[in-house]
Amino acid sequence: MPVEPLDLADDATAAAVHRVGRAAYAVEAELIGFDGIPALRESLAEMRERPLRWLGIRGGGGGESGEDGGLAGFLAWEEAADGTVCVDRLCVDPAWFRKGVASQLLRALLAGAPADRPVTVTTGAANAPAVALYERLGFTRGEDFSPAPGLAMASFTLAPRAPRA
Image (tube, rainbow, N blue to C red; front, side, top):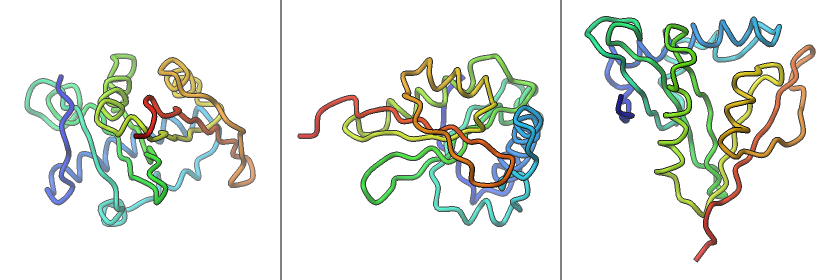
């Protein structure tokens, strides 16, 4: 399945991203024991206003869910003022868990991002599947932090893959 840019100006695409994000974050909330994940409460309009770049993978077929042609997963990122590529969110429709969607999205981002820039991402420290993914792809775990009582987050950085010219 090819990775493609997503245009959240398209109503159907934005609605699919919002739906998949909520479903994925609901699973993460259970994994980490914290239901206050900001994206879980984000409205469709708030999500669309974020200055992010979006990549997605669609399933086969022609329906709404990932299994029948809708969005299987997406990744959203932005470039920080210092050039760091910051992954804001990486979400997979639960119907597509354990099928390589997250790996494929992250690899596509890394292939397209400037190799001389670090890439950062955070996830719930207790989100074992996400932690394993980032470690498997060569990210180094930094210090955990707690942005809210009862929430432990893990930070990861992938060092630049090529020297700056």
